[in-house]
Amino acid sequence: MNQTPPPMDAASLAEAFQVFARASDELTQAYNGLQGQVSALTERLTLLMAALPAGVVLLDGNGAVEQLNRAAIRMLGPVPAGTPWSFMLNRFESTDTPGEVFLPQNGAPIRVAVSETRADTRGGRIVLLHDVTEAWTLRTQTARNERLAAMGEMVASLAHQLRTPLAAALLYTGHMASTELDPRARGMVADRALERLRHLEKLIQDMLIFARGEALGRESFGVCDLVAELAHTIEPVAQRRNIAFKADCTAGARQLFGNRKEIASALINLLENALQAVGEGGAVELDAHAEEGAAVFAVRDNGRGIPQELQARLFEPFYTTRADGTGLGLAIARGVARAHGGEISLKSAPGEGTEFSFSIPLASSREQDPSGAQP
Image (tube, rainbow, N blue to C red):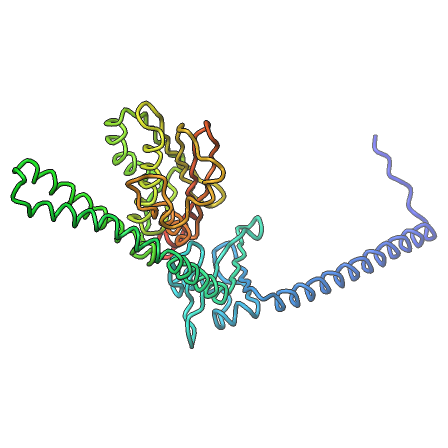
């Protein structure tokens, strides 16, 4: 049977009210203090965003613009809140470097590095815009100056490289004019002359590629598609030489954006060097995988390895350890990698084989989808 609690007297009620009033005052003071801290933090965040040299664009869960800092407004101009970011992407123009775009301005266009990160659990994002125009200009000038310096250093070597096969071709063609040669001997002399002339042609072609030093005609293509193409080219050569060849790609559907022909040519050069290094009965591997935003092509062989004192010179123009080599293959491969924002490295030791790692940044989502739509 429920019992009704006794009614509170006036004194107890007044005391309870005073306790409630004190608790309410304390909560109000705590709330006001918290509100002041939030206001101070908001003000500091606003000042910080305004002072940042990089552009900051806050996007909501629907991919619409919520807020921009001053640097972003200087780059993009006034952008009303609610503007779809996909609409802004249409103003960007692709460059030859993944993650960087050209942004038209009233004067000359600027080069901007664009990166995104998730802002919160609601699907919001933060877009960072870095003006890299000056750094890119300096980088381009430095690369051009390096190529000019290298070309200046190799003028004497070039004269020697051209003179030797040219003298041989002239000698052979001179023999062809002799009436004492029978048809069979004349054919052998003609073949040797053509061989020397083809060597000259290859040398001049490599020189032009090295001098240009820039990758043109870029397109998007799959990493694993390129590996399949390389395997199709190298496997018959390896079989004829009785060399075990293996190709593997774990990059999935990831894409590259660049000059496919030049990248393939650079990698074929590395593979042909590996085949030359191992000889009959050896083994060569091509492995492609994604690593920290880049596609890494590793070419391994189980040959004799390269002595440490020779490794530093391998990428020098016209330096070669092969009698029939032009000495430009590795220099061109490094030039192709750097022109695509990548690099090439070497690991080798006598008796332990050699591994060349050729890395190139993966294509951004915009380069994979020219429309600029977000995945």
